[in-house]
Amino acid sequence: MTAQDVGRFAGIALDSFQAVKAFKLRAFFCILSVSLGIGAITIIVASVEGAYKKAYDIIEIFGPDSLLILGGGTEVRAVAARQKTLTLEETKTIKSSFPSAYFVTPMATRGGVNVSFRERKHQTLIVGSTADYATSWSWAVAEGIDLSNDDITGRRNVCLLGQYVANELFGQEGPVGKTILVDRLLCSVIGVLSNRTASQMGHNINDRIIMPITTVMRKLQNESKYISAFKIRFRDTSHMKSWVEQLRQFLRQSHRLKFDQSDDFTIVSPDEIIRFLVALTGSLVVFLGVTGIVSLVVSGFVLANLFNLSVKERTSEIGIRRALGARKNDIFYQFILESITLTTAGGLIGYALGLASSRLIVMVAEFPIYFSWKAFVIGFGLSIIVGIVFAIAPARSAAALNPIEAIR
Image (cartoon, rainbow, N blue to C red; front, side, top):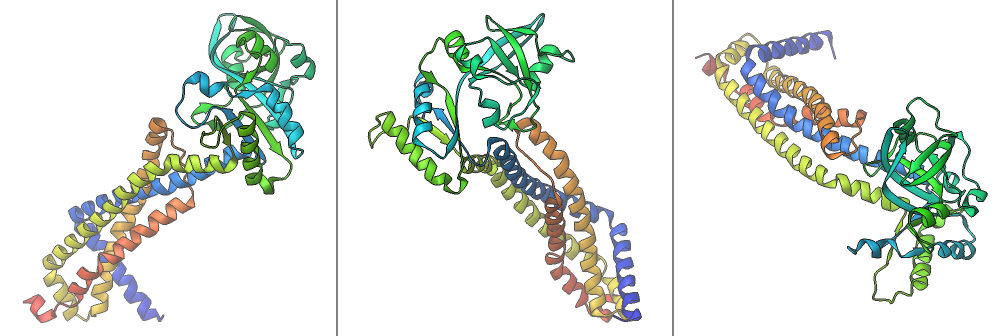
């Protein structure tokens, strides 16, 4: 490219910018229509990325080598029928039947339990488990000690607090060694779990208390047989699908289910977590996708119509420029650059609009949204494409004007 070509292009770009400034109302409507479409597209990309990021964050905590078995199937059933399908004895049988399983950790849960320390009160989730709980969930004890086998066999009134519960009950005061009231049971705090940033399907994962499973079953649930869930970790992660199927058949046989009966348990695997979270954002993606595409198409037609009107309004200007030596390509590229300038501005505003709107969506619907360079690049790229595609016809029309007729 010669210096003359560079100078000519710079002149065209300057004329384009001045034309954008001169036609403020046209610029406003073009930028507004593009920004709405790009804002919706930006949120779509951020929602998809957020869903995958959230899924992998949860899997990192859950464990890629782990399966979680919950009492009750996926069909709608009575609460009691959903809970009382897994037994404590089954966990021992599974451990001996699956040599690759290096952790089989039972859990008995009870939600909405009132706990208190002096005048401070809180309602939380109680999880009864074994001494393997923290290790099986790769959840370090930040303060104090973990549950021991003696705590389990002795049905001791001891507990580990999640960080959220510890802050609610004790604030800045150290909880280890203190006694709290769990329902009507006095319980000694022996440790505090480390803080985890990921939430669990809208629930703060740090809002829980861990106690010996024998204590929870006998003293809080009045239960001796059934548990809520158990977690299994396998050594060989390459055969996870096989483990899922084998475990399903094992439990069906153990529960004496007939071939035409559905599972009375639910197996949660890392793949299931990804599918669930991606499906969770699917409705938002579809809605915003349709909205964004329609908005971009509408903004493109608005831009094209406004530029066609602009060609008619600027006929004399175009004729004079052609008479003074401007080439057809100069007129064509000027209109294209005007369009790109407007849609690029709309794209930037749309990206900012997407950032602002995402905060509202997170507060209202708790959708996981994550903004990265992809959201910006896709939104910015689409705005430029809209600017080029829908300005081609008006730009050709302007370039094709006969200078003598245009001046006349």
